[in-house]
Amino acid sequence: MGKLRAMLPLLLAVVIALAASVGIYRWMQHTKTRTPGVVEAPVVKEGVEIALAMGDLPWGTKLTRDMIKFVTMSKDNLPPGTFHTMESLEGRVLVQPVKKNEMIIESRLAPENVTTGGVTAVVSPGKRAVAVAGDKVIGLAGFIQPGNFVDVLVTVRVKQGKDSRDGEEYSVTKMVLSDVKVLATGTVIEKKAGGTEPAPVDVFTLEVTPEEGERLAFAAAQGRVQFALRNVLDRDTVYTMGVTVADALDAYRPRLKLLSREPETSKSEMPRSLFKMEIIKGSNVNRVSFDR
Image (cartoon, rainbow, N blue to C red; front, side, top):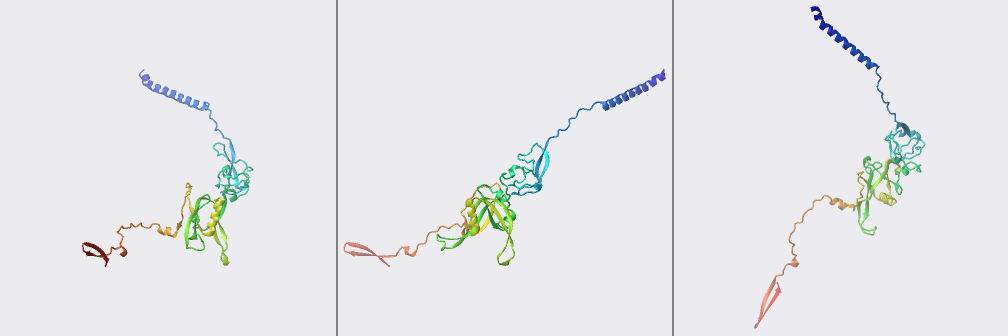
């Protein structure tokens, strides 16, 4: 009887262990055999082919098949004016540059009736493209690029007086055009007279009105043209009086204050020294003055 009582805790522990083992086994079997939850399949969005540029395309380019590629993209969040077929895009002319792998959209193209590339495709209606020969100084060492806006200054020799045959010559610098768009920049080879070697000449094409074109051509023929590059946000027109040699040399001079002093009296204005005499005749007395 005493041995049975001693073994009772041991038997109880074995029973508890077996029950725990059976419970764990059943739980694992239930986990393996239970029906998995329904997983929603990912929504496949419908894609469309979009036209992209094969490489960097400058403005004025007439698009051909070898310049365009198509990739499939989602319809969502596409910008307006995209192209999906080669036929709708071939032969169109760019009015804005397009980078490699960038979408070609309608806002960067000339109207469909424009079929000729080059500068003619990007000149605004009512404007003209006028070219001016220059150099690295005029072009600000390459900082002037297509799409920039500049002011045009000219330095010329003029004669004082209404009659151009007479009068003294002097130089004047004046701004003749303001807020002019640069359409293109480039370099041409100019042959020099006298058998010298050809030299490169920078050429700048500006977009101007017909009246501004006359002014620009006259300034380039009569004097030296200089460009002043404008900030992209500064579109205000500034009016100037022009600068002469005297104006340039008078700049940054100290302003001297004139000391006030009494004006000197000239000899002609000095009071005269007079000799006075009294002439007495009886009861009459006369005073007479004489110059010394």
